[in-house]
Image 1 (cartoon, one colour):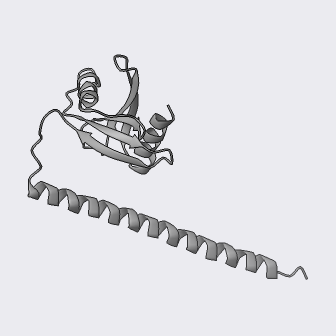
Image 2 (image 1 turned 90 degrees about the horizontal axis):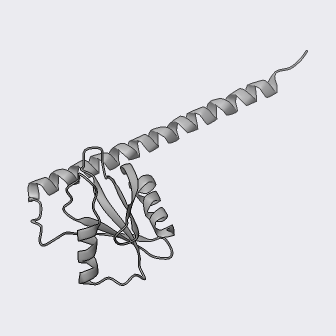
Amino acid sequence: MRTTFNVYLDLCEVRGWWNVKLHGCLDLDMAFISGHPTREDPREIVLPLQSSDNLSPDCLQQYLQNIKLDDYETYGITLAICDSDTTTVYYKITEGLVDPEPPEVTEVKKVQRFEMMRKRQMNIQGAIQSYKTAKVLDDATRDTIGTVSTD
């Protein structure tokens, strides 16, 4: 249960996933998570596992066959393997082989990621500058109030 909670927090707070939901798989007696990595991306399924769990090809096949959402076509699941220190590694598994994306699509995604990170950095820098400005004004106001005489 703690592993599922840690993965849920990682997806929501660190990776910024959208519409994250918790589900149960009765056949395997396991919990799994679904969500959208971005607003535009389709829903993905994530299965939290502990690093001490034994994985075999048969086990992976069972996950692929049993972990599903109603009315949703999935092309694989992502294993979120957590260590005791909450380090999490994500592995995407699929049934059979999946063709890689063309280089043009990969390049576009790299540019989009770079722009998103640059925008976040600019927002952080703007917030820091606003804080510094507010602090200077607050300090100046305190200095002015402290020097007012009551003659």
